[in-house]
Image (cartoon, rainbow, N blue to C red; front, side, top):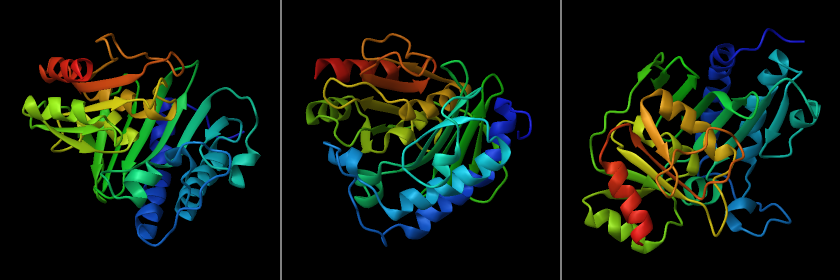
Amino acid sequence: MGQPLTPTAFVREMRPALRQAAAIARALEGRVENEPKPGETRAAKAALTIADTAAQEAILVPLFERWPELCIEAEEDTATAALFPRSGPALVVVDPIDGTLHSYLGRRGPYAVMAGLAIGERYEGGLVALPREGLLLDAARGEGACLAIGDHPPGPAQCDGSGSRVLVSPELPQPIRDALRAAGLEPKAAAGGAIAVAPALPGVRAGLRLAPGSGSISTRGRIGILIAREAGARALGAEGEPFPDDLSTPSRALVIAADGDPVLTELLAALNAA
């Protein structure tokens, strides 16, 4: 058994691993090719590079050293992933490069490196790194969110509700983008993990994500919502209802901005009018 597991300990102990994984992804950016996974029907889901597997191992190796009793939901099939048990006291969800196809290989906005600790079907701790921007955000439930820029120590993260930039899904339909622009907002494509923490990012006001087809926002795509909420954000679904706090309740959209920011109404109007 490893050291005692708490959300605070998880976030603290995994910060160096997320920094290392982000550094690996950034160092290999532009030097790796897509080697699609067999059996995936969507190109975005099939995208895979050696950067994905190397970054995942940078997260899983120290995680296994500290808490080998945990079970994991890892995006890639790597050697260390096979060492974890099928069940455990908590679940760790890992996405080594979120947005491989559009954001990492296609360079259409920020990609993300993510790890979340779920206990009882709810995230209690999470970390999201944006390697290209040199940012690392994390939070343990009830303790506020932290933001580290570059190699500097983390400090408090807070949504300020300023600016006009909105991070959106790369596949967001053009009519919704047009509606956002008509409202004076600036949509910018980003990976789902970046969208989830959007209002806590410097220079970004909000995030809007729509699941492909009739799908739902994924388990991995929800890691950053805890962080954003701890930074003062409000997360909503497509009809303006609170976004589910658990891992599995379906929601086809994520609308997120600082709590009390009127841009939430404008985002919902653009989403539903289009």
